Amino acid sequence: MNTLKLKTVALSIIALYLSPLLIFGEDSLVPIHDNLDVTHLIFKILAESGLIFDSNNSQIHNIFNGIPRGVMGSEFNVQLWLFYFFGPYPAFVINKIIIHFVAFWGMHRLLTRHFVPPENEFLAIGVALTFALLPFYSPLGLSVAGQALALDAFLTIRKGEGRKLDWLVVILMPLYSSVVHVYVYFLFLIGLIWAYDFILKKNTNLKFLGSIALMAIIFLGVEYRYLYMFFDNAGFVSQRNEFE
Image (cartoon, rainbow, N blue to C red; front, top):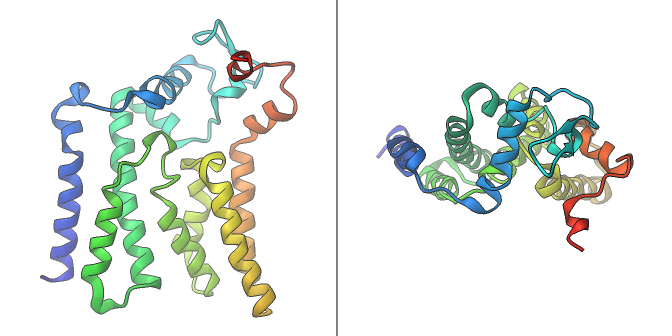
């Protein structure tokens, strides 16, 4: 079976895996805990609040008789805009589709460009398919599913072969991922790779270092609301402290 047929079969399996969301619509079975009861609700409320771009201290009254806008995340979030333009359930489905197909593309790209020789294309497609069928926690967007694509971009830039697409991945990934849950650790590990090159190979590789710094800076810009609430929250007490 040639490569095109293998990819077609793999993509068809992913489509079949996701098809119940389209067949059953809002009657589909989806996770509730930390999904429909929290993140899905936050995106829906914020998208419909009319306060997406308001100040951090603006009150959103749908939760706990009012909470600051700043604790509901950034406006620079792809999932928020999916909710805004398409509505809650279509946004949920579109997000799932993007996550699983990007997972396949990213893992296949990573393996074929860095780890698996061309004659083992079957292995690369099989591993990419397996990765794409994992039950990713969809409220985190590409935080996990996009790591293979991000690693491919960084490794390619490290080799001095970075193209516009690789830099685009570095720039856009923060808009669809969580630095708190995943990328603070991911960037730390990528930084260790640069440190290895610098210490043992005496290679400063400024482009590679610059790509790491660029993603970190964009993440800080995207999550500026959380930084504000952390350092200057005007006496706001979260529900996790109130539990005590």
